[in-house]
Amino acid sequence: MRIFITGGAGFIGSHLCEEYLSRGDEVWALDDLSTGSIDNVAHLRDNPGFHFREGSILDPAPVLDLTGTCDAVVHLAAAVGVKYILENPFLSIRTNVRGTETVLETAARFSKPVLIASSSEVYGIQTKAPLSEDDHRVLGPTSVSRWSYASCKALDEFMALAYHGTMGLPVVVVRLFNVVGPRQTGAYGMVLPRFVQQALKGDPVTVYGDGSQTRTFSDVREIVPALADLMACDAARGEVVNLGGREEISIAGLAELVKSTLDSDSEIVFVPYDQAYGGSFEDMPRRVPDLSKVRKLIGFEPQSTTEDIIRRVADAMRR
Ligand code: UDP
Image (cartoon, rainbow, N blue to C red; front, top):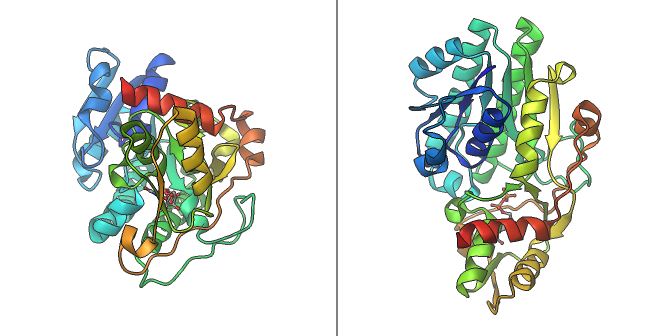
């Protein structure tokens, strides 16, 4: 198979390129290198099955070319990271809405199957746990710009489902829950690589808010095979599917676990949200995926503990 991966030089994208190549597929990666990096795929450049194109999903030309070339499209390119979204609101909205529309429109033109990466952010401040795909979303006001990301991703989902419903386009929408692993940078706000880096350097570990908010981290090494399996799964067509890890942990608990796992002397400091993100900010209090749907579709069962993931991220950073 020939696979077109948008955002192929990003954190998840670069791991997915490796996954497809290891399955014997050929990969075309498109990336504008905004938050992705050529270093993430440098080790793949001599692989004859790997092809890289620098370009944006906002430019219809490369999307048209690569969709025509390939058998299936995995759409990962997006503005990501809470910090990045808050600092680049306009570009983020444009990338996450217009970019996805371009990808879907082009896939429909060629009738190529497409996987759309969405996010657990769409659930908003829902406190229910675990969250299942049909649960209601609870979002804050438009004056709090954090919610633009959740709204854009939800719009992407609506568009994908509409293309499926009205034109029969084979789509699957995957809601990713806090995927972490090597190559993820803390530069755009992601907590786990930030804490690991802080702990390794002996810097203060910065917990935002009171640290009672929870997340469920998943290991990119387990997520990318599941993405490829979902892309290939006929029963997943037209479905929205959660994909994530298995251990809920508070952010204060994560800070403690990072310190103990890495035997670090860093102190833990609590930073008020307004200092961390400026202005009005609302955090998600709790986020735990219900994985029963993905288990049924492809037999997915996450194995990694949060401690395993911390060790792998730290090992990669040390290297
Ligand atoms: N967070 C933190 N310290 C940091 C970066 C993030 O305490 O240095 C918190 C953040 O406020 C949120 C959680 O960690 O409550 C997860 O943040 P991240 O940006 O990684 O993911 P998301 O909020 O999208 O789940």
